[in-house]
Length: 268
Image (cartoon, rainbow, N blue to C red; front, side, top):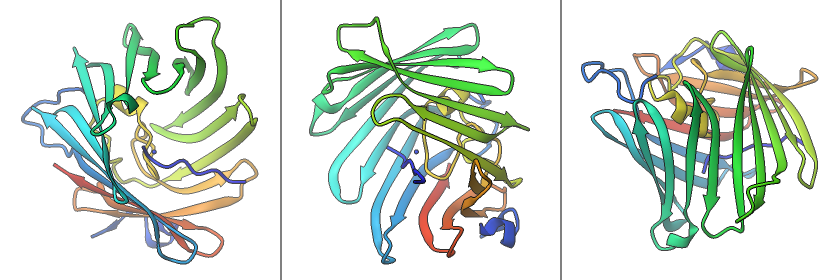
């Protein structure tokens, strides 16, 4: 069964690549677009709206300071604060307005300029997790480990995600889940020439987020998603502004051209 990951992460081939409608602190004179808001809609099989959410981005001197996640069906929201030093992302702290115990903290560890490890703890959960990053040629490998709180070793390997790059874009992702139930799948992507919404944002931040219908680490935007046998599951319509940054990305089922998801983007 095909799996879809929502953010907490088609027709473009027919309509054209894009129809029109990496530093923590870029040069203040550089007016390259930065993401201000991401809105997400998932449509149910009857054509109505199943899920709605949006995320606002806040900056100080064009450095990302925090984001706030809203859910349309709930008054609750999550705030995520980011701390940087010398262009490196150091910590990610998440809090919930009416449930402080539901938050968490991630600490990032580097080897030179390479992000090596992200250690995370969710306050309300009994588990501690660690993500190790490996760099092998054109591949970025992320291994997620888990262990009960207070026990840092040994840790259980929960899943592995391999991202293969070509021309600055993630063209293949392989996911393998080792924890129960076992799961494994591979996705392949083709791209247009439009600018990725997160193109001008800190690359370490881009390594730590998941956004529906967007690979934040890629330079461009994908327009098809296929499985390892070559079967296309989804097509994407990318609608851009005059600067060739997407303002809306629509996901369609390839089989019947049914709209299933939409991601809308606003910029500073």
